[in-house]
Image (cartoon, rainbow, N blue to C red; front, side, top):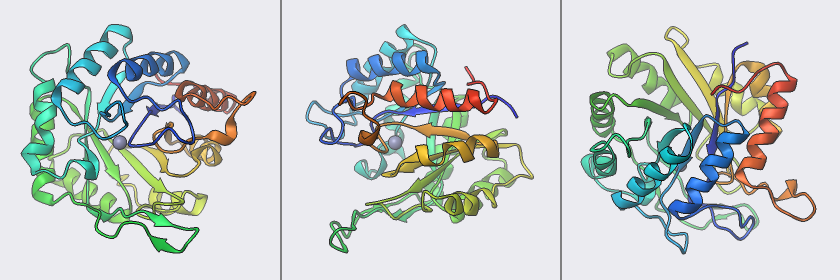
Length: 285
Ligand code: ZN
């Protein structure tokens, strides 16, 4: 089995109440990028955040952050397009990437495409009700074709995201159309706890996704667990030949505290590296 690609998903829109080590501001993200790279991660995924933790979409945030990361280490950069927090039109959602591409020193390596649409309301399992009822993560085919063309135009790598099998089928359609080049890298987003939009973060949930990977094409797959503990699945993913996308953005990992100190993103990456090496897979650089 080949090397394992480990992606650090350092912040998403996660709060600091369960783990204060979630980075928000550019300097904090740059510091985490270096630490995660040194621990064995080869891709960094981050969201722009304000000092209060709110979503921040200003292009200046990405320019400062990417330049800072480039000055520190060669980790591959995968910024967000803003998820549901940036509900603009296709060109508006891609505007920050267009700004990043004006200077090689601020260019990322990937731009994401969530290849489908899904309800992303917050489920409250303690009270059996939804805390929100109107959050749709909307990615029309027209929007996705715009992203695919712009990502190719800029010679970036398409970072393909699948929340369920219908997303995976649309990825396969795009591969058949030739709008996404091979090899394709696909993130399987499992979800648990307060998020129901993906497959459950269980062996069965993962297997139901990997069964439909478009293996007639050259693809690699990685998996994350939004709002759930991916460390419960990492041994299976490593043995199944997948790659791993993990970090405090998806889950606080507070139960993995040592000496009362909750883990940092780099601590989580180091755990995965140790497990992968024990199972015979070196981390990719
Ligand atoms: Zn994200």
